[in-house]
Image (cartoon, rainbow, N blue to C red; front, side, top):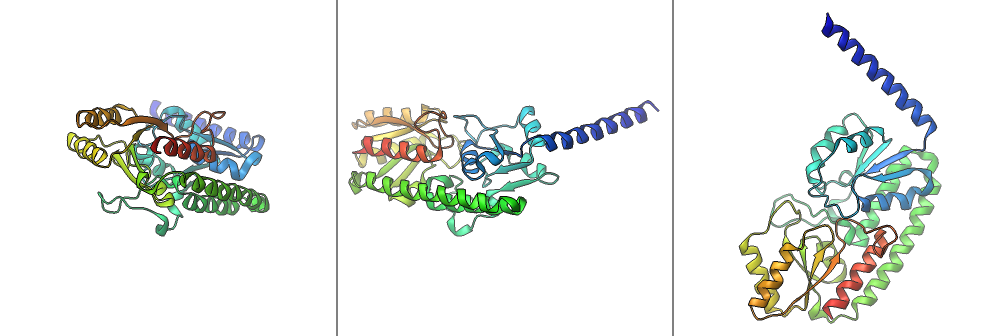
Length: 305
């Protein structure tokens, strides 16, 4: 009998909570929650002031290792729309997001992006490189897909979203021209980028760099001694001037590369950090997606020349 009363009380509490949530939504701006701040930046460029956009992951957080907290779950349940990237970028959140999508409005980039735009991980069958944002052409398609999905949800926003998308695409195209001009200052034989993890394949494809990462696509995998030895040999043989740390990853691995090269008789500079899986502080040089691309390119060209 006592258990029955507890069940009824819990049911009433859930109903009241649901009613309060519906009432709150009637008085509040449309709320969108994204997993990463790079994705939040893309959504903000589209919706601007028409919705409140929040990223679960703070500045400098590694999405590959991120674990969902109770506070995150509360934010997910309070959101009108949840947007995540997929392709196992949010590795440890993946199952939570897929379960959440069964009963809530959730959009993933993975669900709509054309396979032709994706780079595969040669080490693992059917594994996709999730670092899409480093190729502006691919990221433009990500944003077009986001705009299309948001228009489907809010048909009244169509003209506004398309105007914002068009304006942002023009900024991306202008930046792409600027970045290619910067690359022209770097001789072709020096366009070899070595970083803490394998995040720059899309960048390499877009701008003609050979890229090497100490860790794999995900920072869940730890590099072994053989990985370090092979990369030290490669850096030494190619007389690479600088390698790069990353803002969201410990520099321990790349410091081991510097030390290994030194023992090999080759001095290599540890430069960076580059911004890879997270933006920087909002008012800093990498506080937006566009500024992050510009900052990274300047850092790379300056140190490899």
